[in-house]
Length: 225
Image (cartoon, rainbow, N blue to C red; front, side, top):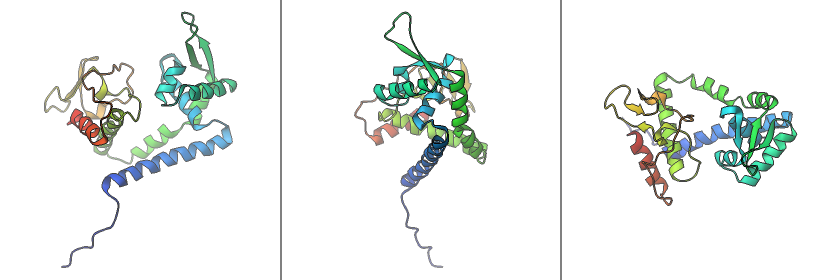
């Protein structure tokens, strides 16, 4: 019996990047199509979505810029545009009027929810995966995001694996191997958080700023190994 011909295709990492890029392109494309009808751009939607996730639906301009990985003047311009549309309002802190806090209005909360339906769409798509596949995907995403953080490509996300309260594999071979010091509970991979309000950035892992991608990937891998 003759051997099957080898399929000529990109490497597995390249195909994973292509797949992630297709999802990103679909999200951007849909957002821009809706922008043409509603007049709210992708970055504006990101600001509204971020404010909806914050306590009191507010944040400083510098925090918004840092979280969205944009420069302060860019964030200020986007916020100014949103304020003109009455989707946010700006206030100066009484204790320090140099600090400007951005507050989401009721109109902005509604607009952000209507415009940004991608969480619902992606959640619906992931329902096609088994529970085991969903856990595997979540774990892979955590490792990928952490590797990008260590490379300095994205801002620190409020994830378990980069949190001071997180102790990986503290409970050995248990079904709930990890431990959260804040809540003092054991948990498994399926309970990993990507945006925890109780997050405190860890001081346990402090890689060099010049770490290359392979070194960062190894560190990210070792956290959950």
